[in-house]
Image 1 (cartoon, rainbow, N blue to C red):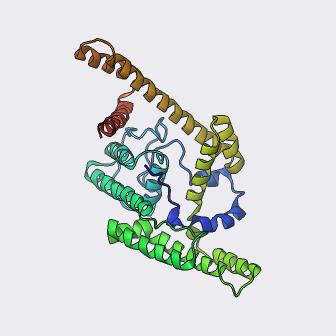
Image 2 (image 1 turned 90 degrees about the horizontal axis):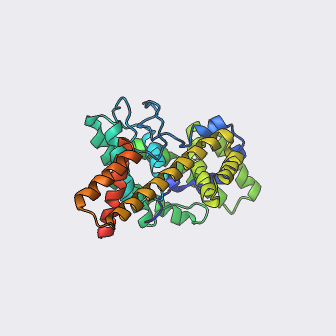
Image 3 (image 1 turned 180 degrees about the vertical axis):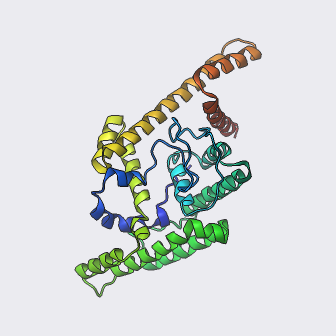
Length: 319
């Protein structure tokens, strides 16, 4: 399956150069925008109780269930949730979120959350499949304008007006500003210094929201690149610390370490099931031994997550 990671508005490439000017930010500032060792929040206005589980443990049961409602943070929350599982098939990501929503949101809003999230995943898949992701650094103005229009139509196809307002209206304004900067950058009547001056002047006059709009996605992309480039936790830690500071690096080290530990436990479970199945035992005995193994090695919450993984793997094998 395709890896699904789309920069906000698809325009991050244009701003990477300008973002570099603000590279020296404090770890606390960076940390506000990065996913670390907690699950996705339903909204920045609704704080979930702290849990001991890492962000990859979707089924963290909270003491209080919160109502899911639309806000300007929902899109970022969805993106973070998908980002943390970007190497997972879309159907499995949706299944993970269904488990998470059932344990996080109130009964009367759970279905609202799962329906919106599923459509958001489908939208991102369609965005990739239909080749309308926007790359400002490589495309000409006509191509960019066409893809922006097509993406707008796709968004309207998947989401209602009120959903569009909360998910994309801010991005649309930022996209237009970025497109204007691209027009300036490609203006042949101006020399390089004049183009740069106009672009920086526009950014300086932009709203705070616009200035920081691309930062979360760009930061997450950088960290994911670091993860792929370095196989050892120490190397990843050092690379993240050099870019974002030791506090952020430590949080991601814990996240990656916990994810690695979980993956190993799942592999051990699958190996045990296979070995038991190969023995000449009665089916009831096999089932009981598997149940005993599950109780010994997984919490009730972890078993819910394990059930999702194994059931979808079985379905994939059957196909």
